[in-house]
Image (cartoon, rainbow, N blue to C red):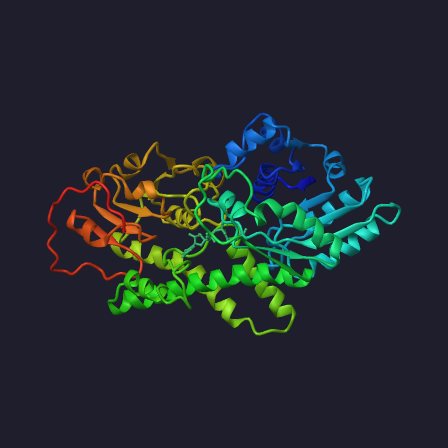
Length: 467
Ligand code: UGA
């Protein structure tokens, strides 16, 4: 099928590239011309595992192209995926002006009827507004527009895998033809019949994904409900971590046992610095606004959001407790991205933390395997290091903000010797507390007992010490 993608952010690019990979013809556009120029010259504006190879292969096969001509892109597709950004407004509502612009563009530029699919994360009832906008802007056109909602459940860092091997595909439709078109678009994935670029043809056995056909309103609500549930689950784990820390239990042991109960499940129970990124924080905020407008008691969601907002306060308080004052002290920061395997620093806990350290006039040396270029736009004045060892040099504390696997593999003995004071504050419980303390570190994790005052460090070499 011929598919247009409006918006070349992370969701648009992964959607466009993966739809081309399963055999469709895809044209992507964005109103940011510099992004299109980057894509046309073979670059990618984001780091996402596997995306580069998929884009290159499908561009070479003429199944995927990028154009700055918005009208040309719209006219190309029988189906148009709207993947534009919906950033939060100051009051927490989602800014839908880009959706409105997309509706105007589609209505004005189309020369044939189309299925218009909302992929962007939008508040409930946006589909209805989209139908109205298309009718108003297209009142002089002979084209007919059907609208569908197709929420995405992609996680940054594993989004190609998530797209090609989803647990479920949700389509919210108002008529049988839209359903048939979407079934056709996703047929290779529903039947799991495509050469998989992630597993090189050796995909692990997994049930075929379920296709859930719902109303447009329900599909929109499913997205809100999922992301907010994940946010609540993380905040619950962090609440447990706080209790553990004060009462002398180990949260790693507690959540492990909790997760073995299939009614609870182990994922999204990892305590730490809270949820960051461009999805969960803004989505829970938008869901709170939606619930309030609907007259529903959203205390549960508000509390989960507050717990999350306090994570960095608590972490900074812990650091201040160890360091006494921070002025002029060198602090190493490992990890800037909001999670591993991405270069995305939007609403990353590390950015918030570093801003606070700078307010205390600390000297920050940071390292991240992928996110330093993006971080420089938000934090131009800190020192960016070529590796973790440089970030640790002469530091009076080292803070782990993102659980990159490579950080667990560092030579921690070498790090200890490079630091002015071997103090590690691990915001992600990446490392093993006992091993770190045995190596001679003052080590603080999240929700784990602090070292016994009588603890005698014993020097034992260890290259890699994951928690
Ligand atoms: C999230 C959802 O997981 C996706 O299903 C959804 O499609 C996506 O938002 C979206 O709306 O586009 P993402 O933001 O990529 O995906 O990242 P997550 O893996 O959800 O992590 C979000 C944050 O929560 C990160 O800062 C991560 O470090 C934190 N987190 C996650 C925890 O603190 N503990 C956990 O157990 C899991």
